[in-house]
Figure 1 (cartoon, one colour):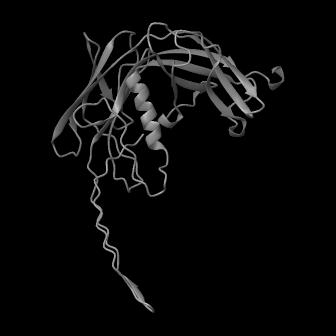
Figure 2 (cartoon, rainbow, N blue to C red):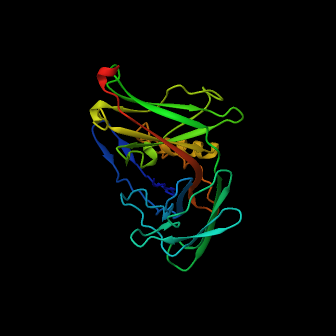
Figure 3 (cartoon, helix red, strand yellow):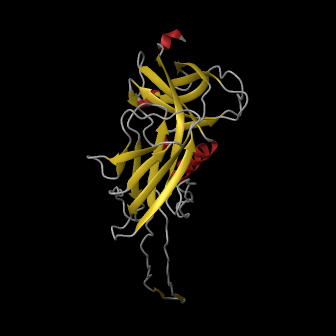
Length: 289
């Protein structure tokens, strides 16, 4: 997700002289300053065993429809409370830093992302940034069910799980169809809290829905849901980031405020750590309902 900070000064001079038979309008002069550059850092650590990614880019010009390039040469580490894990920059993706492929997060641990020697503008001036997140325990995940809803003309994915009693809990869902990840961007994420089922069995809560017109799901397809136990702050960040990505209304309203960040020292983005449990089910035949 791209994030932009605007520092734009508008100087508009409009002179209109009205008369009974004639009128004249002067030229409008608009002076647009450049955009203030900031580091953009995203990272996620989960209980999956895999090469976890941290991406480092920069904000871009609001009026240029180009993707920001990754920033190379930074020193990136993860501290789990006792051991420092060094991330190495990808050989094929600039600005992407990876853990070892056998790395996994542990429930109950707090992970701190440490970024140093970050040269944002390539001018030799470097900065350091950090963020921390704790992997929370996840409730007992039972199963999912994928059913066709004739009234809605699409497939509803229902989740069955036992929510913990003692705490207020927040969830994010990763959705796969035939092992292909569908939720690969912030706008695709679905997240909820346990307001309506705190400490209870969810008994088929709606996780996501696929319209038949999209053609994403068909009878017999395997749908997998990754139940993610996330922090309240990360939950709020996801909501704010999705709201900021929606088209502003009215058309000429100002840009939305930046979502929150837990990255220090003037950077934007987010570092999250969370637990994941996956369950799968096949899409039931329409005739079974």
